[in-house]
Picture 1 (cartoon, rainbow, N blue to C red):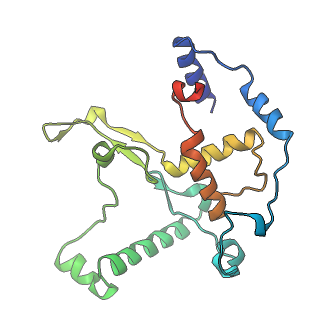
Picture 2: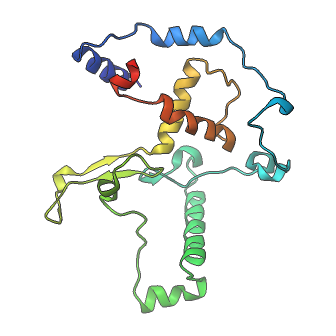
Picture 3: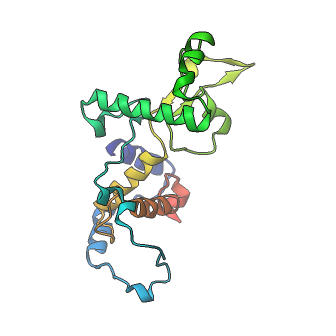
Length: 212
């Protein structure tokens, strides 16, 4: 966070743009003066119609929604030191993909591994983001310069971030300035969608956008 702030302020000073002093404190003090307004259901134009089913919420069902892979490594942040649990979830994901997406059932594993000689599973393509590079996806980014069809090793850039990481970062920033939605919790799908909606509108490092 400190590195991003220093870098942004340095660029703004270089371009002779005014830096707002104590911007975080100003925004926090302003937001603390207001209390969120709870809109009655019959007056809420954005009220979602549906059946109240407690089983539809992973938290109410007692399940923990986790992702075994984070960036380019195992997700030890959420799983802790439970390596076997991570491997079990990775195995479940692979089995689901092979069975439901590719039509390869456990009875066919011997044929695929022994007879056909498959020995590994590639979950990403190198330099894919260099081709599609229109933004950050939910996955990890790997960018490499390609010249005459060959990868230049010295230009490989590994960005261990993704769109979800930026969503979490925006959530932290909003909490620092006392965002009006006090009970927001990214573990809830609705709250996650709220931050996802705000992200493209309030998250930017372009000096022109910040000053507009």
